[in-house]
Length: 343
Image 1 (cartoon, rainbow, N blue to C red):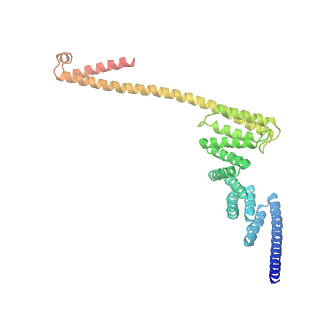
Image 2 (cartoon, rainbow, N blue to C red):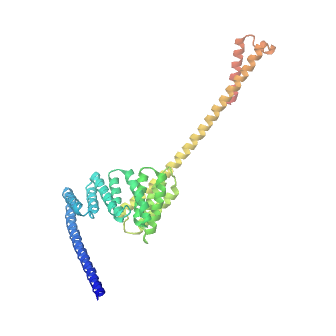
């Protein structure tokens, strides 16, 4: 009986502990729900100010919310920093945007690690903010990192976007050798996620064509084929692959095609000019070499004649009685030899 009473007491204690834990969990959930509701409310207010162009009012709401959350719960802090950074980007205040988005990445990494999907979104927004601030090297570094991380996560869509942005930055920097493999990878990734219209493949085709039609790469025929494919895709559907209308997209691809053709013509012209210049230089070098060799032979010949005259050679003495006559005779012979060589 004593043993049974002990077991019943233990079961009662375990049940009481379970109920207490359940009550704590419900209270925590309710508190979190209230925080989420409050968080949503202030975000809606801030977003409303942002849509009205009241950026300073929206910024104040975000900063107040960050201050409040940092006191007891930092869970929402990275998201708020991210929202604030995106708001500053829309306002054209790129320096502030970079600052707040850096904070979002830092706070997010402390909570979830550097490969958490939300943190990667913050990083992507930070890269665009750097690009807006004309800090292209920093933007390219982040897009390169994102490309590797998204590929590791098998996130083909975001990997393709990162490759596209990185390719454009390298192309603008005129680092065509580095841009080509990135642009090719972008095209490959875009083709993996493309639907039957292949609409999103068109900008990747244009990017690769722009890169490989640079004089340093000079793959003009391949570039023309890529642009032709982009034009066919663009014209085949009424949908747009950019924020432009269909006519502007067709015009953009057409301009790229003309640029590739002009680049090819200029490259060929310069190649012929360089070849001709090289040929002229080769002839000039040959002539200089021949003249130098002739000078050596003439100097050697003069030394032989002077030595014979000084040794009392009868024939030389008869032809040139004095040293002055010898010098004049050698000069005339030299001029005759040079005239014969020039013919």
